[in-house]
Image 1 (spheres, chains in turn yellow, red):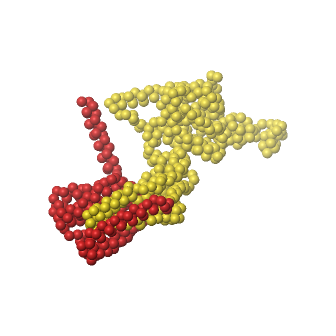
Image 2 (tube, chains in turn yellow, green):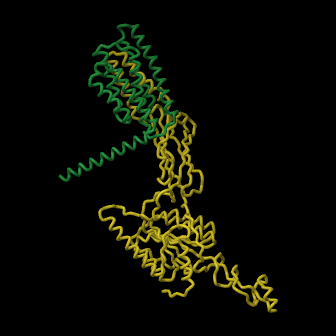
Image 3 (cartoon, chains in turn purple, blue):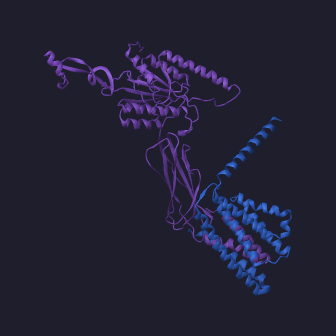
Length: 428
Length: 198
C-alpha cells in the first residue's frame, strides 16, 4: 500500500517540474531531481508478499516469580528485502517482559528470518496471553507499507507459588482404605493395638512368639489400620477484594485463596491423602477427589481457572450442597467472609455434621475503595459486624482462623479432631 | 453557568490528561526515533536558512520559518511536510528573483539535499514509533540509500548547470525541455510501475 510519502514525492516532483517549465528555471529541475530519482530507484523493485510472524515460548512449567523466555520470529519469503519491519507484541500485564511493550524495528533481507528474544518474569498465577504479535513491513524507502500480519497469542500457564503449609495433627476421621493416618479400626497398620488369641485369617508373621510360649496358645499382635483421609478444599469465589500486586506485591483475596489452596493440597497429597476441590460461586466447579502427584498437578491446573464469579442467587441444588462433601472428609473453607451467604452456608454444613475449618483469606490492612468523609466510620462498622459473624460461627462450632502459612491450622485441626472423636447429634 | 463550569472542568481534566501523556511520551522516547526526527528538524532549519535571504531571516519572519520546520519532525505522518517543503522552495524563488541573489551550485545542492532529507527522513519517522527499539542497520541503510540518491543528484546538477552555461541564452529553453522530458519520463515510469505487479 502506498504511504503519504509516496503521494508527497509525486506532488513535489510534479509541482517543481511544472514550475521549472513555466519559469524556465533549471535550478528547480535540480531541486526536483532527488525526489524523482529517489522514487524511481526505490520503486524499481517492489516486494509482493507479507511478512510472516511466529511466537515461540521456551520452558514448560512456570510458577509465580519464574523466568519466562519467548522468541518472536519475523520472516521474509519474498525476493525483495524489507527496509524495516515494525513488530509489536501484546503481553498480559502479569507477565513483566523487559521492553515487551515497545515496538521492535529491524531490516529483513530476502529469505531471512529475524528472531527477537524477549524475557521476563511471571508476576501472578493464572492463564495469561503472550501475544498476539503484529508486524508490518516497510519497503521502497518508506513509499510502500504492507498490510498487517498477525500471529495469535500463546497461552502461558503460571502456577501459584505455594505458601508453605505444615499440619502435624491427625485427621478428624480417616476413613479411607490405605493411608498414613492412625485410625481406631482394627486392620493392617503400624500402630500396635494389643495382643489377642490367634484366629482364622490372621497372618503367621503376626504371631507374637513370646506371649504364645508363655501362654502355650498362639497369640498375634493386633494393629490399628492406617487409613487415608479426604480433604475437601472449598473456595469461596463470590467476592474479590483488594488489589493484587503479583508475587512481589500485596495479595488480593483470590491470591491468598489460590496460594493457600495450593499449599494445603500439596501438603495432604504429599502425605498420601485424597484431596478434592470445590468452588462456591456461580460456576460451582468441582475437582473429584484423588491422591498422588498427578492429582497435585491436576489441582494446580484447576486452580489456574479460579476467578471471582458473583451471582445474585444461592448456589444450591445439584451444583453445590452437602451431598458433595463426604461425611468423613475434612472440609477446609477458604473464604474472606464478605458475603452473608457464605456464613449461612458454613452454618448449614456444620449443622449436618461436616468437619469444617474456615480460613479467613481477607488481606490485612484492606481499606475502603472510595475514601471519603464517612469512609473510616463505615469501614469500622463493617469490620465490627464481620467480627460478630465470625464470633457467631465459632459459637456454632465452625472454627475460623486467619491464614498465616505454616502452622496456622494446627490448633484448629487439633480441636476438630477432638470434636470428631466425641459423639455428636446431627440433623439429617 | 453550571454548564460553563462543567465545560471548564472538562477542559482542565483534558489538559491535565494531555500533559500526563506528553510526559509519558517524553519518558518512553528512545534515541533512534528521536535521532530521525531531530535530523528532519535540523535539515528543515538548514533548508530555510539556505532558501531565504539573510535580511528576511533576521527579521521576525525568521522565527516563524524556523518554527515551521518543527512540524514535519513532530508530525511526520501529517500533511505538514509538503507545505513546509514548498515554503522553502518559495523562499528560494524569492531569494533568487526578488533579492537577485545569484544561485551558486553549492547553495543549490545544499538546498536540494536538505529538502530531500526532510522528505525521506519524514517518510522514515512516519513508520518509526517514538518509543521503538530500532536496529542501527535500519538507519544506516536508509540514509546510505539517501546519500546515493543525493550523489546522483549532484552529478545531474553539475551536468545541467554546466550545460546551461555552455548554451548561454538557450538555458531557458534547456530547462523547459529538460523539465518536460523528466516529467513525461516519470509519468510513463510510474504508469508502468502501477501496471507491473512487482
